Image (cartoon, rainbow, N blue to C red; front, top):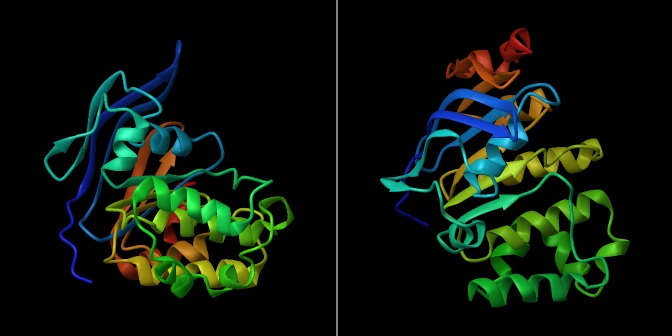
Length: 231
């Protein structure tokens, strides 16, 4: 699938909740079709960064761009329509709806009914079509959330801590999916699991107390989890 991708770039980003400033002068770039990981401890500001890019928070200063399009000031639903998808940390699916109904909602929102594309990454979902969201395991919920986000061929995927609390086998599988999604979309992944990051990321940013403290582009350094030194 050759898509034309833009880079996702954040420049000089300052974000505050009320009086409390959370992000300070953040700069980062995800190259077109690349996968970049953002790592750091809890409370470092990583979720705030994704929420800002996705349009849920408005920065005090700075720019967020996809290609040459300025994203700041657009509503989350506008950004979603533009192909910028945000998969939140809390693994929320509609508990009373089946997997089929969850996918149907995403399809009617995006006009993309090609579920086979979703099942190619997550064959397990096909077997679970009639199961209600409330009866899915954490791993199955995460698959459904990412699967839903893939409908409509997103340009950008913003994924917040997808492997948190999941069994090693599921983490392993998600790693394979992210590997395959590289090149299909421009991906920014917030992730604590450094071995997974080492496996899939082209570049890693370490965030500490709201600031980017390191940008690591060397594959060997990424694979060896050298980033741990900055956390």
